[in-house]
Image (cartoon, rainbow, N blue to C red; front, side, top):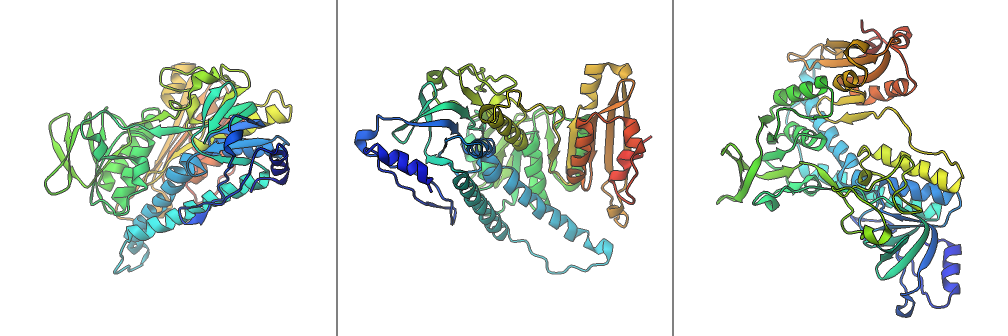
Length: 492
């Protein structure tokens, strides 16, 4: 609910009626907060120390920290709290990935002496459990904001003047304003494209598609293709170039493509969908640029994302954007407008939840704890692609390291082995690892892993990279045996 001091302040003006409401969303009470203002007071703005436009991971982190530091904070959000990550990204994706991993474990249970008969998979049961978990998180986010003293306004906010936002007919003014509206999936300008769905639509599927076509080559495309295939769907993956996961190290790119093919995903290189139509039997007919046609029950577009800025009326705020809609910021998240900042996917920084959170927390400390130098300044960005098995990277690819330091300054160490979990398997999923080192001290500037447990083991090694560890530091570290991770400290 609205904090007591805020209710008293608003009621004192005598012209504003304030109501706090809990509105059920997705089966739970999310604690959504509304301000209901009498018509005659619509022209009066409510003033806050901080306005946060966007209730995703970065916006919520910024709002909570700022309120904890003593600021009066308002947050504006039209959709479910938690943004992409909680609702149609990291969280529900990881739950689907866990299900796919369970399917693989059942398939290989016989290797360890288990007999598994009569196994059935219920897509609807998985979806119901996943959605209930997400709904609980929505409620937790609302409760965290309420506890911190943040006033939440529900609606699509837009600027009507510098540091002034209009939402639901109410004007809000802030001494400081943070834009954290995230991104949205791109649907390509292909005839019939509306018959397909974005990654958001994937999480709305109530029935498992028997045949799926996935268009794209990045994180989302390979992850959803892998999940669908592991759970039993036939999957065709359309890749417009000759490689997946373009920014990643070649070892990661090539190994992920190999694993997807082994898993049964049909990869169509150097091709795109050029037309989509509904066939007589109700299925989709996806015509490719090479004139082949694929039949599908679902078409997933995973061809990129764009910043959610077009509806914000940024010109009224004096905020400059790049041609693609991204907001220009400096290293302290300042935009071109005074006391106006941007964090998260709309800035062109790495589109990762932890990056948005780190930027928001640092900005809160700078604004309200007088920590003038506070900023997100990590040198290493660890990330994981949840394929089967997962692929994990931190630091520079081999190609990027050679471009930065020169061929002569770069040393590469690799390892390929059958992890012990595969010891009894007839068909083994090899683990591959690479360390990229640079300079006379052989500083480890890149770490890349594809294999069982890669997602968990990389976090600790990312700490080492951030601290500037060298290959000698790795060599001195005692190995834990038997593990896959020990290979990273025993490479020669």
